[in-house]
Amino acid sequence: MTKTHRTHSPSADGSAEHTAPDETDHFDDHSAPSVGDMQLDERAALRRVQGLSTELTDVTEVEYRQLRLERVVLVGVWTSGTAAQADASMAELAALAETAGSEVLEGLVQRRDKPDAATYIGSGKADELRQVVLATGADTVICDGELTPAQLTALEKVVKVKVIDRTALILDIFAQHATSREGKAQVALAQMEYMLPRLRGWGESMSRQAGGRAGSNGGVGLRGPGETKIETDRRRIRERMAKLRREIKGMKASRDTKRSQRLRNEIPSVAIVGYTNAGKSSLLNALTGSGVLVQNALFATLDPTTRQASFEDGREYVLTDTVGFVRHLPTQLVEAFRSTLEEVTDADLLLHVVDGSDPLPTDQIKAVREVITEVIRENDTTAPPELIVVNKIDAADPVVLTQLRGLLPGAVFVSARTGEGIDELRERLGEIVRRPEVEVDVLVPYSRGDLVARIHADGQILDTTHEEDGTRMRVRVPESLASALVEYAGRG
Image 1 (spheres, rainbow, N blue to C red):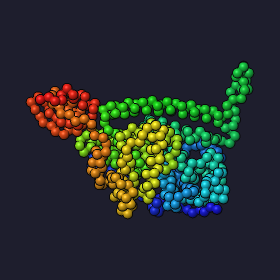
Image 2: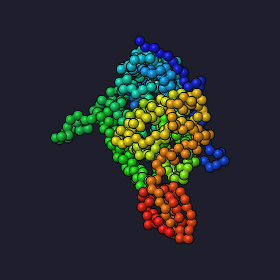
Image 3: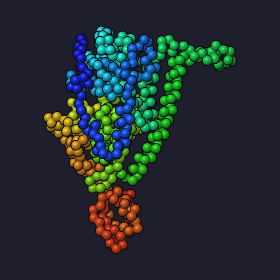
Image 4: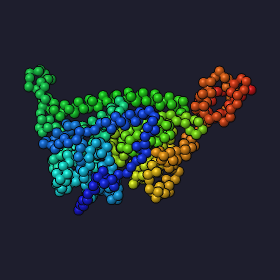
């Protein structure tokens, strides 16, 4: 027995939306625009063309057309969990659709033990969905789950408009937001991996044999049936995927060189991880004073951004903003972004940012940890220590914050927008990330200013005085730097 209820578009009445004040934070209007501001203006200038009909005359052509999301109806199957979790999942799907540039008209949720094997929602509900599409004038149906190729085909035949699933929607957002060469290559690879088993075309045309030399007397070895059109396309996609993998591997080598240099210099590395739109980029800006792109949108950041910062005691470290995670993150994306996610495995500390204003923050934490566990397992390494940072406390419900303080002992509560709690966070970072191991007393000649600079950058100065022959310093430094200072130790 099934049960259906509707949830209206979060954009229509605002009830399912939650604002993210620190994600829209801008710097002083009188200052020069940052790189992030310019990227935000460029992204805002790209708008999808409205008013174009996308009703399909031949539903099989869907994979060969530009993905155009305009007026959409959402549909989900509630198989487990509470009603609040089902509504939150649909609200997130609506936010994803709006981030992709669409207008959400209606949301339908169906209670079932499991999705229907044929049409995802069952034949009766598929007919009902067709009536909703006709009544609203929608041109696209988005399903809250990953559909099989057969389910997509069957549902399109009933509703007679384009049907896409959650995975295709996320891939479309990634394609819009990727800016770097590596990011674009990773997204293209993920899209091809998703598209390959779903490749279809115009009716019977894809089954026609290309012919080649099949009808000619080409000689021994050159006679026989040619490839069909769909076989040709699949082969070309596989060739393109192999080329993309080679390119990504080459780009990974460049990043590995930079990472190994940081490790060689023993500069601590902190990776910011968390759910999409939790405020990771805003926190990076608050801790470093940089101006990376900040936008109140899902998956605004795809390319890892690394900035230099300092602990309270003056030691330097690097802070990396990584791609956000989401419930049911497509496996194709985890695979394609593996090289980017290696920043997580090599970090000395994971700064796990949680949106304190989200209705279900603990579900966010669970989803992020699942992805991190998968990445750690694939790289056959151990997970770095984790510090949970609850962000957006200025917009959160005080009751929810009180509950989180009990559930998350040791977490730091901050607002990247107002700056509240940032100083406490800096202090905690300095306490957790390893301190230099060796304490030495050296007299560094004035001619060796380079060594003094290295001590300031990589070590902790406990005491310093200026003498006739040089600078007397009692410092705590890494072993590699201590070996370079050994000839100046114990002088005087």
